[in-house]
Image (cartoon, rainbow, N blue to C red; front, side, top):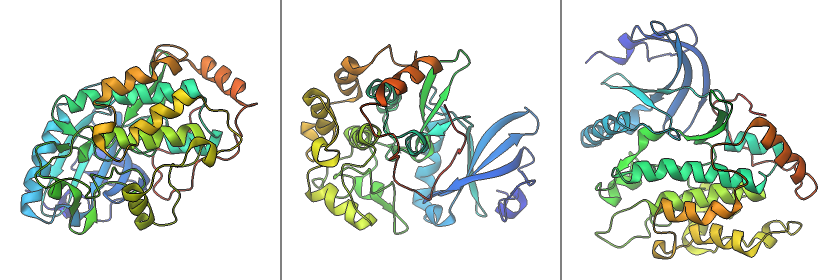
Length: 337
């Protein structure tokens, strides 16, 4: 295969053309897996996201083979609530993934700009994400990194609000041994703030991770959307790991004493955050059904005007100035009203 230098991966920045097809426009952000750029396909005249993977992630030959197999699976996933994986290259000098560019904002960025989500909007986001998770889980994949940074919010061509899961490229086959799914080259795969206890090692020998790990992570996201703070407070990744393994999430009234929360809503969120996965929702469809009573319209049909009305009604009940916690791995920094 061609080297990373010949592909233009080394020193990638605005103006460079990757593999003769993708002109880099701007760097969107970066994280544990690599750097993300906005690019334009020079032949198709469309925008794409380019994620350049860190070399350490693919140093092991066995991992490279699995990663390539699972990346191929990701390119076959087509669902309205999942960002499309268009292309993937893995080589000795560098590797990258090409995905759909979404002109919107992440859940974290929306929360930072607007404060806690109105309940019907938070439920709408969660139900759409669950539809995407159901699709990949039924095809034998796990996402493993559902977080407030990996759910994008935008509007479709008809002006309807849409939530999409991004970073499907690190999804894993459920048949991958749990030990291999936890770390690679000394790095934890996923964000410790959102990882389930079983992803952090609390799993019996011989057992496999399953879709309930993604439901746990979505439970953390839903908690953050509703309250503007996470269920566990920590200053370090190690602190989050210990709390996911040993502590119960904060009750709503403890995290936000001024809030007026229904017992049924709190029960749904805390069930998703059960330490024992057998006590969580069995699958994405069951969790989605539990959230249906909190929707104000069928998921995926809200308009800008409807969302503006939801936000206006929520002003008196929620302190909108708090926002989400600061995070240095922002990406897709365009705002959505």
